[in-house]
Image (cartoon, rainbow, N blue to C red; front, side, top):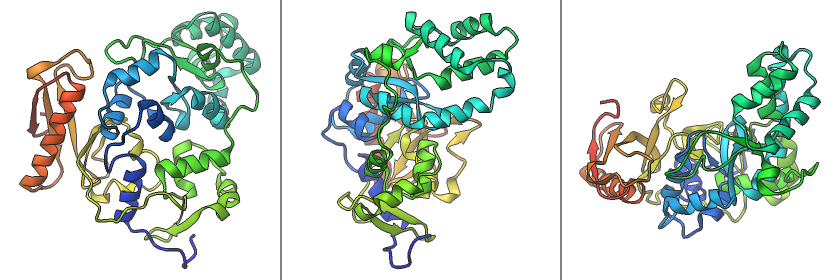
Length: 377
């Protein structure tokens, strides 16, 4: 728990600070590569979300910019934090994955029953040689491993290969308008690097970067973002360099001393966020962006909906009809459907509509219409 002498940051203060770090209070004049690095990667379980994340955050962003970075291998798609796919800069791909490797090793342990008799070191070596000869599908990797361990559980073999090796999805997967099936190779082979033991970014450096992108935050918040445990020691080492606060529940929060913490009444424009946006997944306590009364409305089963921020908080859902994410010029027939939670003023709805038209112009190939209604209609 925090010291009672630490300043208290209310929900709106946390909201505005986090939006500022996330480049969501105003669009940043920043390159896509710099933004991906600043944000420590973009959640990328689906192909198009990284593009929509950058559109919400960067002035003048066009999908072709990130697509070009994918094709030049300056950014890559791979499993890192929370065992989920992220789009990372090349440097972070090489150094963040080793940092979270202990969590991936534990994940393999959960499938150990299906790996009876399997030498994991040999599995790792065989998988590496197979995918470095040429990019492979997961099905091909599984079949290759079954040749040596036919009695093993096929899914467990796939999980072991995915967890033990830093596999990237090679292009055209992830390229706007061109995305194909998933084929995998190691990050080192894709980037022309040699494997280096101990290459992980120092954990203290990552703590500072996390606070710069998601702070103010608790130890538990960062552990939720990274999918790691036992980070308290790093925060304590850094304590002399950090500012300490507490939230309204008394939880201790850390932050960079000079990081922006705007006035809680700072205006926050509407923003359309894709499914699995980092903003909604990177804190243990999400009340800074998701009000308790709407918890659960942004998900159906295991699938996240696309969300709308109004005054900095999740206030609705959205979808695009016709040509969604294709980057192929959907034209006049494109419709943005917006489902609002609660009631909103006419002025607020006009702001949402204007932001929606900007989304359609940049991401759906041109003009279209914005309609308020149910996304399930």
